[in-house]
Image (cartoon, rainbow, N blue to C red; front, side):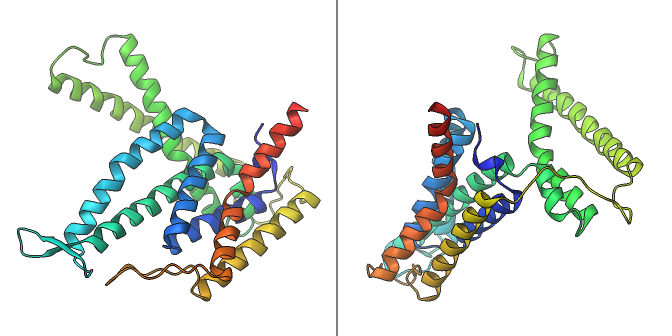
Length: 290
């Protein structure tokens, strides 16, 4: 069972808007750790350990790469470790900032993976279909395109492998040609599918005036309590950011990490905000086991 997915689309969408925006805006080290590990934990709850291991592999590749790229182009910082061949300094602050930027990017990627699992296309169309039907449809199709395209490419590759046309055991050029053939077939499917979808939606009168819509979503007491909790926690995190409790400077030297009540309570509020769906999932598992 996916307990949080059964909540109202407004609650789901509001949660992901909050955590994704805070993941980008809050560069405080504590907030970065909270966002990254909360997103990984929720991703493991939704998609299992295999997906989690895949994202950890991305992490091992992306974190050092981002740190090196940032250190090569960003030369701010007071702690000079050495000088690059071009004469530019390599600073300790730029390396740490690159690591933190990589954590931010990874957390956003994980949150969007969770978003794609929870916010289905019908939920998005339900929220924004009346405001802008065409935009809602295009956006929902865009979010679905990558996973559907990947799945279809895997099916085409499997079918070609069963026919012995993947080029396995041959030269690299033969394997590349085989991969391009699979990609070409998948791209053809994607173009045909988009045309069929457009014709189907047009035949159903999508986007015309006076159109009615059906939904199975009801905003009950559970949704009201959860949405109120998200709003309160988000406002307190914003308050901590405005007060400077969740601010942190990397250049020219590292700023001091505050440990007063406002700073600690703001971090705790951010932790609670990030783990809200995890708590809901654990409660759902406990209820089903009972």
